[in-house]
Every structure is written in structure tokens, then in C-alpha cells.
Image (tube, rainbow, N blue to C red; front, side, top):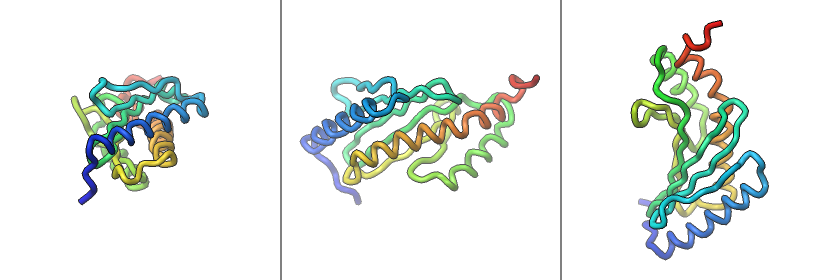
Length: 153
């Protein structure tokens, strides 16, 4: 079982993650905002401007054992749901540190988590970069599958 982090350890990690994310924003013009959740939460929102999808926001949540991260990819498909989900499941095979999943209202998300003991600046950069680049890569294809009739020329 992974280590259970107490409030002091979580507060220290919180400060480190904030520092890492603000540093990422300074070095990367794609990141347009790094915001925080409520005062009592260990939660961040990293908003990035994309080329394929206008904006991607990665939500990062620090819990007692793990750092969870996710991004909303697209709403539930209006058509071709079986084909879309097959496409996403096949893509899961090649992803490292994250996976496609179905969330509230059958929307598509990209999610993952890592143990708190693995949190580092490099891992935060990898997490944010992986979610962003994966969304940018797959979005044009999957949106055309799930909403095919809207793209008929």
C-alpha cells in the first residue's frame, strides 16, 4: 500500500506543485492560466490554448496517497458511439500514465494518477504535456467520429 501523507506533508507538496506549475507557465506560452481550487483544496487548474481543440484544461488534485489528474476531452457522442469507444480503447493501449474514460453525462475524459512519492517537477511537466499533446493528437479524429453528421460537406 502506498504511503498515507498527513496534512504537513500535503502542505509541503502543495507548495512544491504550485511552484512547479507556475514555472511551467513561465516557460511555456501554451499555458494561459494556472489557477487554484477552493482554499481548503489541494487542487489546480492548468488552462492551455490548443490548435486542434481551442482550450484544454488539466485538473490536478492532490490526495493523501495520490496525485490525480484529468482533462475533459469531448461531450458524449451523438452518433457512432461504439466506433468512438473502440477507437479510444485502442488508443489506451499506447498511452503511458493516463487513459481515456467515460465520465459524467457520458463525456470523454483523459485521466491518470501517480503516487505522491513520485511527484517531481519532471513528473508534473510530463503529466501536463502528455494530457495536452494527447488531446491535440486525437481530438480532430474523435470529434468527427462522435459528431459525424455535423462535418458532412
